[in-house]
Image (tube, rainbow, N blue to C red; front, side):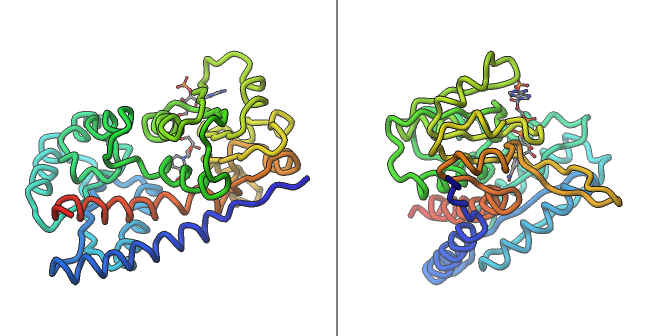
Length: 289
Ligand code: NDP
């Protein structure tokens, strides 16, 4: 058997087109386009690339893209003052502070300072609490994108067994909450989990968000399972060239799974598309719609 490849690129393109249509309607109704502002502190090259592509996608969706690039020497107080001014700016619907922040800044304090109604990364404790209690709020983008891919592949997942590997606040924990809210039975695995292979072998849905290339072995996968690989790991392909691989041994898993996401082209493209969707949703909520 060979798994059906889940085409995250195509799904993300469709979502971005849907968002663009929604943005045009919002703009016609409210006389202004939704606005997303991204804040980058320091000069981490990977973060600079992410911020650039978020800005481009925002503009392509017809939204107003704001960008603040601050030096690494920016103090926490200065960053908090900027967040406060963005909170107060009626043209800004979404605020995203790019992580990681320089070590002298407490990222928890910065996230908590963002207006929860503008927290399009879904990391504010209020949004985390709403997600866990199964209420409407802004949901972190990567798990939200994974959930769309799972639903599209499997439809109703009520009663399905799911294993999420990785318990970060950004991916693993919100993923487990989303699956629980969709009535799956969820195991949230991490570095202290005993016999991960046995948990994976029972799972109808496997979400791997670890950051270790190929750590989920193909022969662990239950035949027919839906495998969502969040991992993005650059391995040296020689000659100074890097190759992106996921956390799942793709070649092994593809012969057993029912559905599987490739890396790249699976989960990755969904993240920015969901960020745009969150910004439009935040704009509607703020406009009272
Ligand atoms: P973190 O480093 O924050 O979390 C990794 C998690 O993996 C931790 O909970 C850790 O457990 C767990 N872990 C580590 N080793 C093992 C092991 N041997 N067995 C089981 N669990 C283990 O990573 P993120 O959640 O931020 O990211 C995970 C991966 O997803 C990365 O490759 C990242 O690049 C990628 N990513 C991709 C995105 C996308 O858009 N596609 C977006 C965000 C992330 P413990 O808590 O016990 O330490």
